[in-house]
Image (cartoon, rainbow, N blue to C red; front, side, top):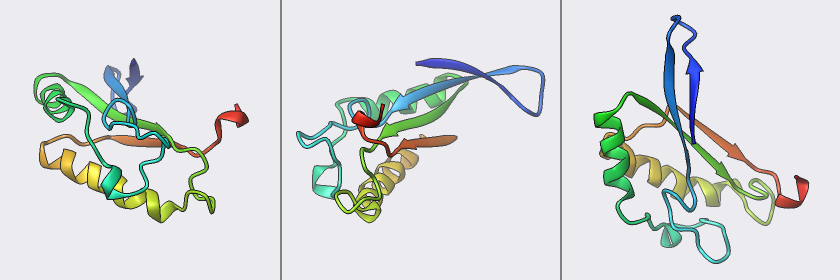
Length: 111
């Protein structure tokens, strides 16, 4: 998804690329929760592709992810943070940094 956002410090528009984490950057496990380092698996070619986007375009990257029930007893935040921070660290090592991260904690049935 591509969206253009007006830069607050200037009159020009900057290009923003919104990238969904699970299913786009990471393979989504059967239980739909990446709550351990063992479940952490990147989609084929994604690290190189994101790195090329950063090097070859003027897009600002924004990560979006839905994490059903994050922060509840069923999905404690600490179980999310270890793999999430590892993803960010690996990507940053390849020059991929996200300007923002948006994490939706609601359940699908919450609409």
